[in-house]
Amino acid sequence: MIPDAFRFKDTLFRRLKWLTLFRALFAVLLLGSTVVLHLRRVDTLVSLPLLILYALILAIFSLSFTYALALKRMANKEILGHAQIVMDTFIVSAIIFVTGGFSSIFSFLYLVVIICASMLFNRRGSLVVAGLCSVEYALLILLEYHGLLRPVGIEMGFSTVGYSGPFALYKILVTSAACFAVAFLSSILSERERQTKQELTAMEANLKRVERMALVGEMAAGLAHEIKNPLAALIGAIGLIKDENHLDATQERLMRIILREADRLSTLVNHFLIFAKPPAGKPQALELSQNLSELIDLFEKDRVALGRIRIEKNLLPEMWIEMDPDHLRQVIWNLLLNAAEAIDGKGCIRVEMQPQGRRFLEVAIQDDGCGMDDAVMKQIFDPFFTTKPTGSGLGLSIVHRILESYGFWIRTDSTTGGGSTFRIRMKRIHPPES
Ligand code: ADP
Image: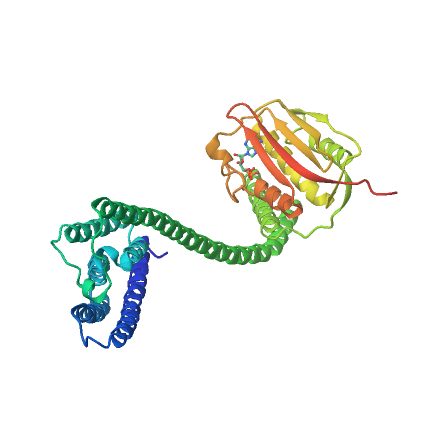
């Protein structure tokens, strides 16, 4: 990942490059308009204001050239950016001075400089530049008003002489207010732009990570698939050896350990395969209460629940969903298994169906087990997350993956020691016509 500081320097470099180019273009425009002005004035060949304007244009060109060189050579681009913007405010003041001072139409150029500043610096930087522009403008107008500075444009008819004090003050205030308003607004905009860019970069990095993970996942699924068949053969062969040979007590115990661990490995591989590549399934119309009832009956007889877990049912008939029956079995079984495993000793699981409007229904599986704290709750759907000594951490990831493929949602309520409830929201369908 590119460090932020590096990215910032890179952006600053690009922006300073554009600013230098923009400034040079502005100088070309100014030169063009000055030449036109010059050609129209047949009486005076080169008047003082025109001379100063030409000198200014030359200065802007030389500065642009110097900036371009410094941009390549200078390591600290920030100082260069600051220097350029401060210099720009002086250039604008000079242009205003040459083109009539108080009556110059070029005071808007301060706003352009402020917008450029907001693209380079943060909000404080832009406001400082706005302050600098206001001070320079106020000085220019006040010195002119008190007769200490005579705008050179007067000879060329740029300037109208004589204006009242309050009007000068009014103009200073309006220009300063405009400077600060533009600084504020444009810095908000460029901060947003920076933020959006950062978010986009983060999303891009995340997408790349996800793509990498998907690749690793596909490889792992391939590997698991290759392990599955030899493992099944191994378990079968060991079973045969066990049945056909007379083993002493120690050998018997070791054989049991081998078979148990091989079984565990086989379950893990199978679960992982279901998680990594869930079988496509053949969705069909299912009457939910009947399917749930059969599953619950089967579960009550399983060794995890037998004689220990009581299951209370509150099922509603004639509610139909579209789902592969194997997928439904996998989801409900995993949730029932987790509920039973969360109960220490004897306990109760409640399975309840509830309509949610006309289009949806909810199946809730509630246990009075150990419950979960917030930290656990945040991770339960992550693959391989488990708090059980021999858990695979894939049960809920599979549940989530299957439900997601049908557009169904699952949510959890739980408190430590207060049991847990898993609620599945499913889409209802109309009963099939028989
Ligand atoms: P595993 O059961 O192999 O640990 P799961 O993905 O099914 O994997 O569950 C992940 C974790 O979620 C469990 O280890 C457990 O901490 C927590 N969990 C799931 N269901 C419940 C439940 N009903 N009550 C308390 N904790 C639960």
